Image 1 (tube, rainbow, N blue to C red):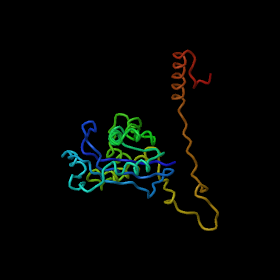
Image 2 (cartoon, helix red, strand yellow; image 1 turned 60 degrees about the vertical axis):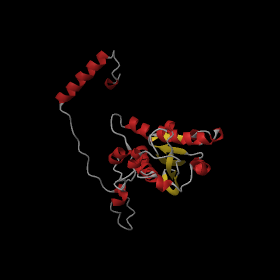
Image 3 (cartoon, rainbow, N blue to C red; image 1 turned 135 degrees about the vertical axis):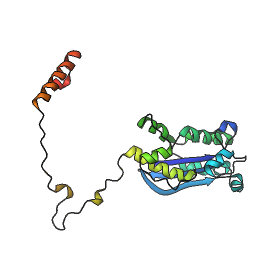
Image 4 (cartoon, rainbow, N blue to C red; image 1 turned 90 degrees about the vertical axis):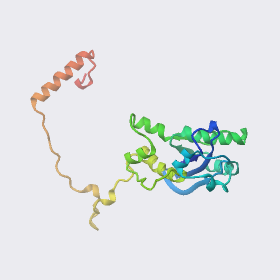
Length: 233
């Protein structure tokens, strides 16, 4: 299974107002393992960058003056994501910008979803953690992922961090920690799970509690019209 974790940086917040992409960063997952395959490019947006955006990512027009335009890299970018599942945090934002860039090139380029499927980690996080903060920074804290080196936003760095967040959110426990257990003595053939275990404690319930429990089940059974499963009907 090939997945691409993607992030972009832009000149502003709204492609409908003519804002453009200035950076694309992608990392590749194969069978949920991060590979060395990367796609990273800075782009000349052919327009001024909003100061508010510069404050977020630290990229200015002077740095981008000699960089390629989106039209110069579109084919390579689409070839990189073709046929994969693309993972994005707050996908409508990045996809909206990418689709706007593709639309400038002509209808033959289609939309991003014509080339790949899209998985929105923000939408997934909101379902998994309703009522909580689900920004990338908040998720890093929740899943104990170190992002202390993230002073400014950057597409490639954020894609790498998002890859760790995605794997933690969708895979549960990542490391089992078995290496921390002492090994069996050489030649014994013993396995770690074969070690003697302490006897299980037997806890008995007082008869008064049992009687209260029976009365509660009977009340449930009466209220449900005889459908209390715990009474063993």
